[in-house]
Amino acid sequence: MLKIGISGVRGIVGPSMTPTLVMDFASAFGAFVDRKPVVLARDTRVHGPMLRAACVSALLSSGCDVIDLGICPSPILQKTVRRVKAGGGLAVTAGHNDIQWNALTFIGPDGASLNPFQGQEVLDLYHLRDFEKAATDGLGRLSTPPESSFIDPYFDDLRAFVDADSVRQARFKVVIDACAGAAAPYLRRFAEALGFDLIPINDEPNGFFPHDPEPRPRNAAQTVSVVRAIGAEAGFLLSSDAGRVSLVSETTEALSEEFTFPLIADAILSRRCGPVITTYSTSRMIEDVARAHHCPLSRTRVGPAHVFLAVGQDDAVLAGEGSGAVAAPAFQPAFDAFLSMALVLETMARSGKRLSALVGQLPRYHIVKEKIYCPASRLHGVIGGLAKAFHGRDIDTGDGLRAEDKDGWVQVRASGTEPMLRIIAEDKSRDRARAKVDKILQTVEQMI
Image 1 (tube, rainbow, N blue to C red):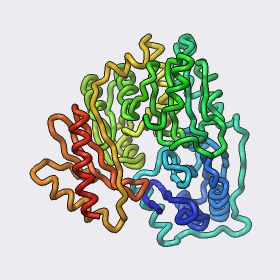
Image 2: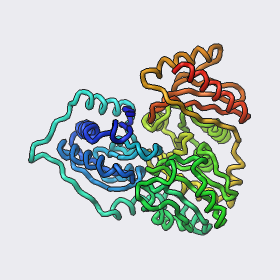
Image 3: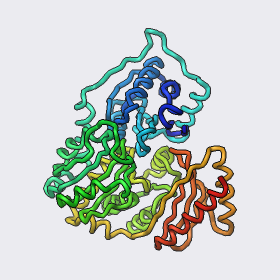
């Protein structure tokens, strides 16, 4: 299985994601940045060293200097790209995908994921094999900077961006599950920066994930148990690249990943109103929050390439997806779980409210998410067939098919990270949301 798109390439390592393929894509990226330095980082997956070596070889042979951060969360990589004024960055991580997957994600000189036009340029270079190889005197140089040179500046900036003093005075007990991913080595540094009592779990960066690295309630059993046992004020689950986060309240409720964005938005927009960017697949909660603060909200296609293009066009103050990914562009144009956790803790500290109380202030909907395997050759036919099933309803085709009614909405779209159709429904009634999804699943199964 292989997914090639404007944000990069991902696949199952071995059958589809091979070192040769990785070298070709890294060579295309080297041509795209025109031999400027590239910052490289990876998560902890066991095949990461192999693919990292392929990237290094290709970039050096393209004439790019490589600044290798080793195992490093993607938001810290992205912050470093901007700080050192590199030509771009390359993250070797599949984020929320399970252990057999890996990916290359391309980062632009501004620290954001490449926009659709830049991503298409890299794809064109790859398909045309239009990348030159440098002569001996033009080869790039490899450097491995000391950890303090990129970790300290990041956490210094984070501490300055949020009200760290309020968090420190609150002396929260916080459980964080790094899922043995890229954030694992840096949890204690994060806790020191904000001054809370850390209880880390799955913080050994060995690359063997203890559970699916997608931050969702179904993966929160360990965090829930520890929060209950020690009476922690909050629990957090991270993706393997530290781009996404979901929450566990002090009452041990494992919250849907959909709550992360509106919870943070409610706090940020109360202090600074401005445009908000989200996707067609995100809960109506964010619409209600933006409306309450009189802030305009725009929806775009799922994926950082589309989200951050819209951020720049609208000069947005906040962006996020229903996956638990949130960005504050004033800090950096990147989905950042460290920032998200810091903003949640800051909100708790400044308001004096428990996490469950803050969540209780949000409007509640019921959302059901499913996915079903669909061969790439059948995607357009299946979606076209479903459009007929939606006959008589107003359909938004901004990202797949999306139809709304007074109580909720339903969407079908092709996944950008797996050979799957994603089916999402939200409603004021859980039973109605479930019924909407089941009806579409039955229809798709008949088509495939």
